[in-house]
Length: 177
Image (tube, rainbow, N blue to C red; front, side, top):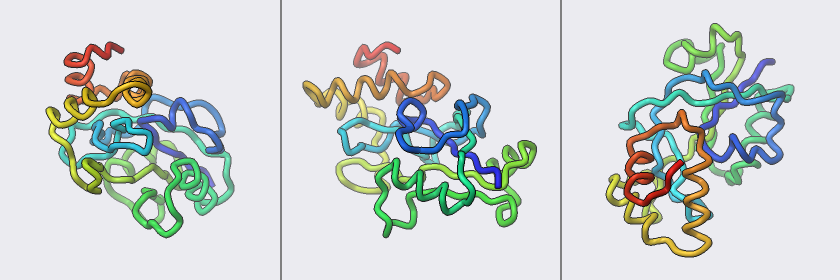
């Protein structure tokens, strides 16, 4: 079974125990990504946001035998609780014949594609998408190690994840890439 994992944030530079079969490729599908999830480390992490303009995400093949093994590895890397059913996105060639991921996956002869599907989170509320002003204000309000961690996160996200929020964050806060 040929399984790919999509990525657009820290998974790229810090895959940890995710069993990658090789490097990250730059020609993934275009998905609506934005800096809209306050992460456990205080950073404003990237997440799929329905109203965001699409960005070409990255992808890598996984060195796994089954879809279950792939999902469990991603769940472990992302520290998603086992009882949370919405944290991993799954596309399978046999059950999802349409959509942007299907159109991208079929020519690559992928049997399945997985990704982190945690929703935006702001002010402790899952699903709440901050405005760009809220995002910049939040990051500007961090200090010390938390702000440095958040700044490094923004800098390390691959350049092709060029979102409107990223442009505002880097220009308003001087967090040049």
